[in-house]
Amino acid sequence: MYSSLLEPINQFLLCPSPQSWIDEAKKPENLPVILIDHLLCELKAGQSAMFLIRKYAIDQTSSDTLLSWFKPYEDFAYRRVGSIETLKGKSQISKSIMAKSDSPYSQELIDKMVLLIKEELHHFYQVLEIMASRGIPYEPIPASRYAKGMLAKMATYEPNTLIDKLIIGAFIEARSCERFAALAPHMDLELEKFYVSLLRSEARHYQDYLTLAEQIAGHDISDRVRYFAEIEAELITSPDKDFKFHSGAPVV
Image (tube, rainbow, N blue to C red):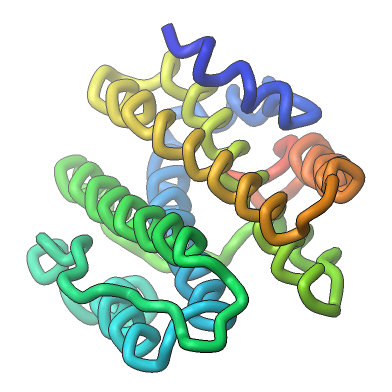
């Protein structure tokens, strides 16, 4: 029912998730780690967008606004301060986020990243609600090798570093979309509906990242996309002892 939405995702990624990962992820005993890692991935996706526009595009007032916007989420996730009640209604921002006067990057970069941040923080709260309803306590867990494995291969000079960050963002969002679709049929009705509801935004995030990378590069980036596609596929298909939402083939 969502094959048309997934078609460009599946063409972008070099491989599907291993069946062994799906088999492990659908086990009821692994639901807590899937949900907790999903929760943290939503926060990290928002943070990545925030760090990107703080570094490259926005003025100091806007930067301070973003930091204060994220603080209750970071306090909860990293410092165990706050609760689901204190996070309710925090995913919206009332102030405008403005470009710095000398920014070479367009307002489009800022607008797309701010929308992405709003959606990621809203999804964070939705996952937390599901965990609370199922009596799954939040416990911090370390990140998987996935994002770090791609970020380690970024160029070290601008604007190529920014272009690589955007390409990597596209792969993370595309893989998330692919995994939600792969997991949905194996989940109970509530989780199936939730994962399907995420597909459209994840697919749009992937497209936004890729479009921005192409615009900022100003030339064909297909070789660089292919470079990261191969790294991403290796991370997803190779044996991985650390089972997480974005981990590779499980080593049981």
